Length: 139
Ligand SMILES: *[C@@H]1O[C@H](CO)[C@@H](O)[C@H](O)[C@H]1NC(C)=O
Image 1 (cartoon, rainbow, N blue to C red):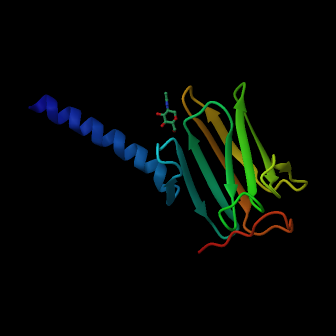
Image 2 (tube, protein in one colour; image 1 turned 135 degrees about the vertical axis):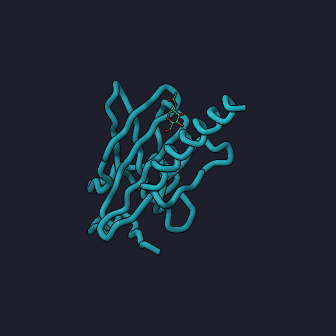
């Protein structure tokens, strides 16, 4: 019984460590039914910071749409190659391949790949002068 107690404690400890990292991001949503794409985000006065944790070793795309459609959406595409994370800010004016935005407003904070998942953290100012980017409101 004592042994079982110890195992339980270890598990609880591991779980609380994981919750600890989620505390940094008060908002969390699984973006697909299979739970392969998790998005965490938080706001401060100036910016929004997002962390995408995706079960892929390919690229990660995130569309921020004013109306749920592809047209008019602000699209961030990121990937990790040779241990280095990359990010591009694009926009879509139709359902064609998103065009690279002249003004790159999303800033890469960090990113890594661990064999099963790609994790990318990036942020942007809450308002920018680039009309192709959607305004994000903290509400
Ligand atoms: C890779 O990272 C993801 C997201 O943080 C995590 O859920 C997964 O367990 C990690 N996998 C390995 C093999 O470390």
